[in-house]
Length: 143
Image (cartoon, rainbow, N blue to C red; front, side):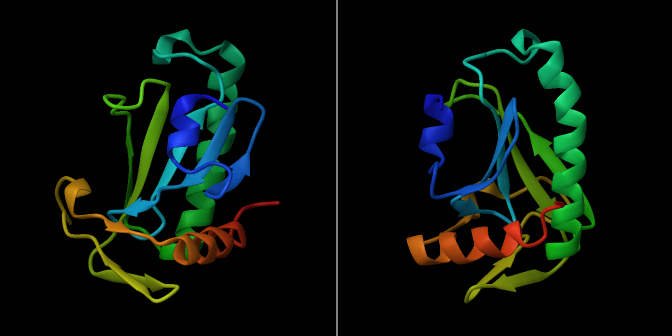
């Protein structure tokens, strides 16, 4: 796994793995169910991904949206490709909603709703919360 994937807590944060992509629970939750969608390659530019990775992205995003709709009933979903501190291709997947969602003893309001996500006001999960929220989200993942 590349440095970016490791930095976001792999393997403890692993939710789903595909041939070209990996889905991780984002340890800092600006909204409940926030994820990292990371390319497994060493590509540092979106255009450098293989055609196969782009094709698989359609499947992965569909499964992300199905799972998060069931888990948090989002109103919108944001895919943010920031790649400033972490150089490998990845997205921050932020489900958006009005109000608060709760799980594993953590209540997470969408403090930026209905505008830009408030990434700087994210709630940092402890190891037990990471395990609980990760396992909860896995339960919503399509087979």
